[in-house]
Image (cartoon, rainbow, N blue to C red; front, top):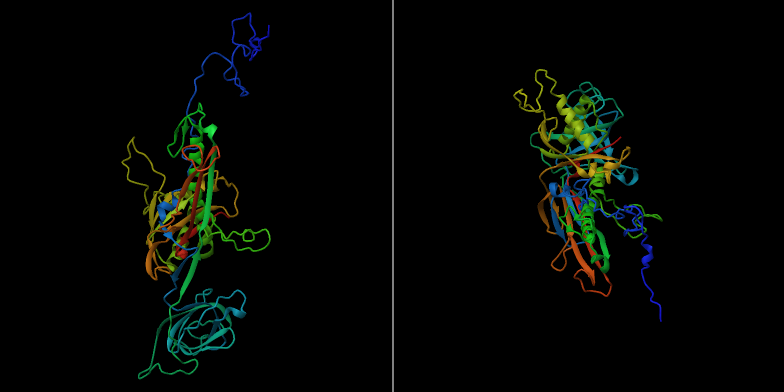
Length: 493
C-alpha cells in the first residue's frame, strides 16, 4: 500500500501539560513581534495617527497669484523704467563740471547708460556722504569719445560748485544728480544742434525679462497582485482616499507630493548658468528662475531681521523707506517662518508699553474672561498696509523648516498685492498681471497644467501587457516675478 504524504506536517502542533497559549500551538505571522501568537484579539487602531497634521505644502501661489496658459518655450515681458532723469556715482570735477559713465564696453562692472541731460536744464547735485547739495543750470552737456559724459553747469549760489552754498569739494565721487526743471531766456529756441548745446529728446526704453518653463514629472507603479491585497490598516490621506487597499494611499501620496513639487519647483528654481563639465547645463538642463532667485537678483534683501524691539522697528522702517524709492505699493503680504513672525509680533507688541501714546493689542474689558491676543495678522506703518501669515513651507521640517543653521536660509518674503501693468510680447499690448503668477504650457491640443494618465493592465487600464498599474503625472510651468523691485526677501545671517 502506498504511503500518503501529508503537508503540512501536523506533528508541528506540540501538546502542552499546562493551560497556556504557546507559539507552538497557534498560528504565528513571522513579523518579528509575535503579535498573533496568542488567541486573544488585540485592540487594533485601524487608522494611522496623523502625527504631522496636514503634510501638504502647496497653496502659497494660489493665495498671491494666478495661473495662465502659454504656448511657447519662453515667456518674455518688459517693465517700465523710471520716469525722471537721475544719475548715481557721479564724479564732481575741480571746476563747474561733473562726469558719469555712459559706455560700459571698456569699464568693468559698469552699467551702460545714456546721457540725456540737455543745456538749460536745472539739476540738483548731492553729496550723499555729507548731505551737501548744489542747484545749478546746465550750460554744456557733452558726450566724449571716451567712457564719460562731461556736464558743465552754472550754480545759482556762488560761482563754482565748490563755493556754492557750503560747496562740494572737487574730485568727489559717488554723488547723485537729478533734473528738476529747466530755465530758458526770453526768445530762446531749441534749434541749436551744436555739440553739447543741443536739446536731447528722451525716448523711453523698457527693461526686458524672460523665463522658461521646466517639465516636472513623476509616477507611481503597483503590480496587479498587490492591488488585490487588502490591508489591516485603513488608508487615510489629505486627499480623502480611504479604505483598506494600501496602494490607494501610495498613489494618493504620490499625487500630493507632485502637487507640492509644482509649487516648490517655481519657488526654489534656478537657471542653469554654469556651463562647465558636471554642471546642469552640460547635462542638458536649462532650469527656471524661481521666486527666491528672482528677488535675490532684482529685488531687495534683509539679512537677519533683528529680535530686539527697537532694532526690529528700525529695520522695518528702513524697509518702508526703500519701498518709497520703488513702486510704493500700498498693500503688501508678509509670508514668514515662525521665528521672524514672532519677532514682528514682539516689535508690534513692544510699542504698547503702557506709556502715553502706546498702542494696544485689542479692546478688553478687564474681566475674568479677558483673553490676551499676542499675535498680529495685519498692521499699518506709514502709508503701507501689511498682512502677515505663517508660511508652512518655511516651517516644515522636511523642507526649509528643518534648517537649524544659517547661511542662505530663507526667513520670509514680502510680496506686493494687486497687479502690475506690463507689455505682453505675444498679445502686443499693455496688460495687467498679478506681480506673481504661474505660466503653464497649454493650447487646444494639449493642456500641460497638470496631466495625469494611467498605463498597464490593472486598475481599470488596459493599455499594455504589463501586470501593473502606472499612474503618471506631468506639468510644464514657470513663474513670472514682475516688479521684483517691490519684493523683499528676509534671509538668515
